[in-house]
Image (tube, rainbow over the protein chains, first blue to last red):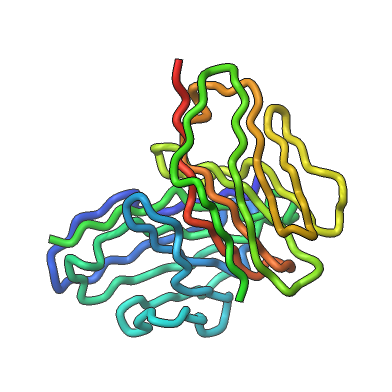
Length: 116
Length: 114
């Protein structure tokens, strides 16, 4: 139980275009979704926290207008990288508190974004 | 602010042997949760073990156990009878409760050799 499905698993886009990443909670309601960014051989850095029906909370230094987060339903949160540039290339992971919390947090499988 | 420190960037262990990964943290909270997550080459984050700070008993999950020293703010992970499939990045993480957010350490890359 407590599965988060993340899509796409990888995407290549041209510089200046936008890319949307989706995270769906399959068997529980995710009122909160955390979005992380991970550079090669580095740890996960929290970018923002989304809550269903309200505005996302961004960590210091994260551009709100570049990384648009929407959490319109209890099972879907999206991250849109707008006007992507090569420096946005990274691995993006979503995570939600597991339903019973006995499992801690459950993570999506991640999205590898490459901007060319 | 809470911080999590993993002082071992890389560790190596022979198959069937035991290895301990270190983690220290800093917090002013008295009640919180600590986690060890494994990230294999697939990059899927997998929960290894979880410890509640108010529980004095160290958590165990099969071959995985922790040594939780609350006063010292230390939370090490012991892997017994290491297997090739244990090779991965291991992240120590902290959460002060009620599913707030996870603060991760920098990770330890574990190699398992034959």
